[in-house]
Amino acid sequence: MLIYSASARRVVAINGNMMAPARANHRALPLTRPRADPRRRVARSRVPAAFDALVIALGEFGTKSLAEVLEPALELASHGFPMHVGLAGVDASEGNVVAGAGASIRQNAHRFLTKWPSSPQVYLPTAKCRGRAR
Image (cartoon, rainbow, N blue to C red):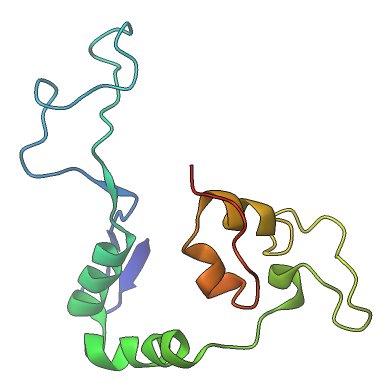
């Protein structure tokens, strides 16, 4: 993300794409392409760092505490929220599947039920898991 600090009159960049473990180096990590040029091999041990980047931005430039910022998200996580028809994959007025909603919950229901057994508890609470996780 790019943040312009008016008080410092400068732009700050905070990268939250990925973060490597502190001891990561090219000798210690398994590589995704073992036959590739060693200088171009990519280590698999990276983790998403978006949350860390947001916390850094909040700490450096924010006006609220982390608790204040997280409160609405915690409320949604605890009590749910009305689902957008595109996310659900249904036309609210007719109950039909929305064309082109490839990332919708409805279009991924089979995958949730067969491959990710904990997902239906969240996304399909009324469905029964008939498949086994692979």
